[in-house]
Amino acid sequence: MPFHKRVTLQQFIAETERQAPEATGEFSQLLREIILAVKYIHYETSRAGINQILGRTGSRNVQGEEVQKLDVFAHEQLVRSLQLSGLAAVLGSEEADDYEVVNPAGRYVVLFDPLDGSSNIDVSMPVGTIFSIYRRLDPDRPITEADVLQPGRRQLAAGYVLYGTSTLLVYTTGHGVNGFTLEPTVGEFFLTHPQLQTPEQARYLSINAAARSQFPEAVRAYLDEVDARHAENPDALKPRYVGALVADFHRNLLEGGIFLYPGTVAKPAGKLRLLYEANPLAWIIEQAGGLATDGQQPILDRQPQKLHERTPLVLGSKAEVERFLYFSARELHNMPY
Ligand code: AHG
Ligand code: MN
Ligand code: MN
Image (cartoon, rainbow, N blue to C red; front, top):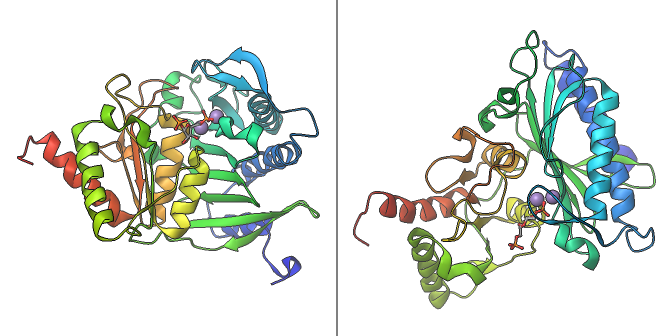
């Protein structure tokens, strides 16, 4: 279908707003500000080798990771758009040491991973942006850390952008999951993936198997069971691991899969961040019929303690995550293997 016959993201947002009697239009405007920043990030990401925006800045972020120039650009675009919107009260970014109060009169909390999969930038592999929006707890009280540390179940919206062979924006506001593809010549996102549901059965397994000996017993037992399935049917659960959470997540969302980033002996909490990586994707996968767990409880039920808190993350097709949880439960309750 030619793009001029499709629904644009702006039209979709407007329609969703018309259906929500309590809508004030503020929330839709906040989404539009994020979309503007995402278009600028798309522009730079798709020309990174030309615009001299590849490579490292030479500094390290609060995560202890080397910061890429595109990390900083993406972070700055999101902060600027959200600050100018006047609607976001407080921002939490992977690339900022602490949360930042930008508009004391704002009503929303916006948390984001401005550029996910940074190690892919210089080799032109897929990267992403992940965002999560909450309402502040009490607009009549000053912003505190409690406004930022809300459980994932309280999200108003969660979304990600995949800068891949095409640039897609996928998000939920609790009424299903919809995907939009950017048509760069007109600078609009068009509805291409309405009401996404993830297949119950997984086709792909995404994990950094190099750390297998360091994983908890439950994960190793699950991977042993996967090996046994592969011995019977090598196509049972194809390994696919791109090194960018958003890219692995999106493929598995569409095709069916399971993504695991477990903790290890050295780092029991794993690598991925609860607030702006695990929570938004956990809500999306649940809305699409899948599951998301830290091995002990649903990701969305966790009460965050810190802005950059890390969590083990296992999410994807319901049947496959439940197979994983069987091994977790055995370990948790010391059941005989
Ligand atoms: P970020 O670039 O935002 O720090 O995220 C990178 C994350 C995630 O995107 C990916 O799944 C994971 O790091 C890959 O980690 P390993 O390189 O340890 O496999
Ligand atoms: Mn990330
Ligand atoms: Mn990042």
